[in-house]
Image (tube, rainbow, N blue to C red; front, side, top):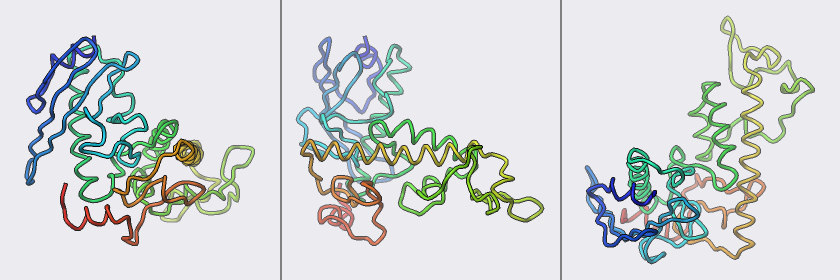
Length: 268
């Protein structure tokens, strides 16, 4: 049973209060290295459709009940990683799960203090997640993973340009223009027609478009369900409706009062 595997691998920073066949209650107490403070939160870890799910014992006590920017889901559970609670059948799997949970709780402290979730630590919500993973893989193949992460943080990028079009050969139109990746031959930029990795370019553009579409659909659904912004983050898809329904990062420094207070005070 997954819960038994988790119990066998309980780390020293988690104190179990009770355990049944379907539920584990306890308290996480994480002492931060090279920082002042302690993360302490009461958690409920339980089976949900055969997978492991985790949430606050009383949702809304330490964190907002729901905040998609902080990966606190609509059902008030934590999203600690892509399919993180699935297939825990060994102690090794359980150790990884506990590690993901600890990392998640530390990222919550970052979000509380800064009003932002680190883009390198973020996976798009819902059905947008697999498209982001595919886009990241294509960006790695092209050697521009850092550029992709900067785009997620709000920087403009060529592969997010909605005006880009493909020809019947599945290559970018206007083949005489420079390759957008910036590839060079003999010191000169090559044309789109001479791009040596057109498949990766097409994958990156298409998967990024799908990521944006699915993200917009996700927030559209959340708003239709009556969900409201909790006010703890600078950017929120429930509040900032830009770029076809996708929130863009705030580079001006303007944010919600709660996010600004958190960033100024440094309190977690």
